[in-house]
Image (cartoon, rainbow, N blue to C red; front, top):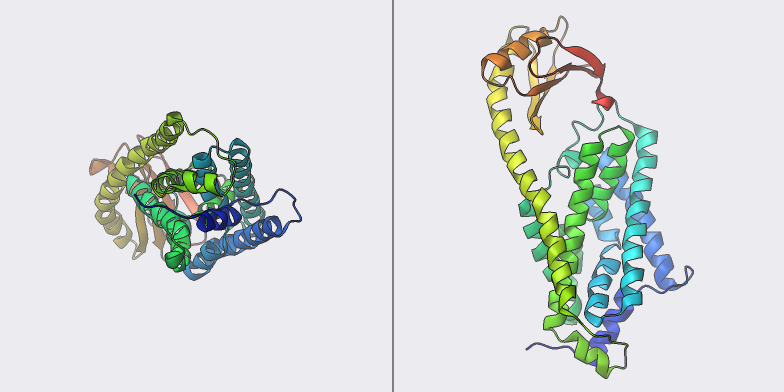
Amino acid sequence: MASVDVTAVHRMTEALFIERPLRSPSSTRFWGLLVLASVIASAGVVGDSTATVIGAMIVAPLMTPILGSALALVLADRSQVVRCVLLVLGGALAVVAIGMLLGWIVSPPDAFSSNSQVSSRITPRLIDLLAALATGTVGAFALVRADISDTLPGVAIAISLVPPLAVTGLLLTVGRYHDAAESALLFGTNVAAIVATGTVVFLVYGIRGAAQESGLRVGRFRGWTLAAVACVVVLVAVPLTSGTVTVARDRALAADARPVAERWAATGNWQIASVEARNGTVVIGVLGLPPQPAPSSLRAALDREGMADADLELHLVGGRTHWCPADTDTCTVRNAKHG
């Protein structure tokens, strides 16, 4: 069985266990980098800049207390488990708060509906859990093996921690509470995956034995610890399964709605900018000059094509949004940020 030596254990504990005093080097580094990463991620999401968001992923230090939680679980060090968990929760709340602050400052008229950085983080699926499990394994493996630690920046990019929280904060400010919860679920998925895979990797590499040899405090490791970690992963997988089914249905709905929307737009020489479906609601972006085609006629066309049970959200040039609920032939104009 693979194992680590005393030197590796000391290196890991120093890297993952953040010191208690707020003015200590590890604490100031953690909170300083976290605030900067939050600002970078929020700005990147607002600007719909993938490069900026990737920069925030590299800077973000949240991986440290998350893997620290896994190491503390393996060592059965209750005080460190509590401290690492509190750091993760406190850090997550700080990122959300910074995202909300920036959201109040920016507050776009379309409520981030056309933002690719937002849309890619509000539909977590089972494949995201699978990717997170693999990425978390690589992160823990790279930490155990000093000779492959150069892969950690790549792990930071692959595992999305700060950007989903920034998206959560931004969406809370525009009233998209369901989508904010979905992006928070993506963060929770990644955390659960990192803790689960980190725990397994640390156990496989014999961290407990090396820690005892080094004089570190090692408690009694119980089977329920692994069971609890496994249960968390399973609990996360339940809504992800539902999300996977919803995404598949939404894609089929969007595919069916596009030709109908294009025929409707052609009657007024308008153009369809986008067609997507979100949780059973058809969301269509339209561009063109007045006069505009009647939204109610699109509602009727969708009904005729068997989509009467799908709500319709129509975004027109100028920021106006027409809302056409299912099972009705009337549409109302409303502000997009409350949609």
